[in-house]
Length: 90
Image (tube, rainbow, N blue to C red; front, side, top):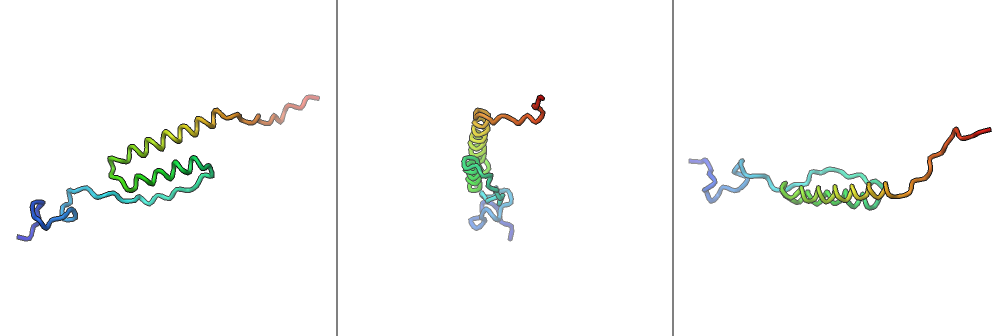
């Protein structure tokens, strides 16, 4: 008989359609933002390309924490006063 079963010594993962595929890069292009800290965090997403799906969560959570911290630091930084175009009193 020519049907390969998982018990056959010659049947590899490619012969069994029920085996999960290995990790593969998604090929998502990341465009630089111009902010080095944000760019480094976004580059970290590439680490998930070499992990199985169950390892992606740790990378995503780490990047999310970093991006939230960057946004929080923007809120804490002093902002320049907005121009007031109609503040001319004569």
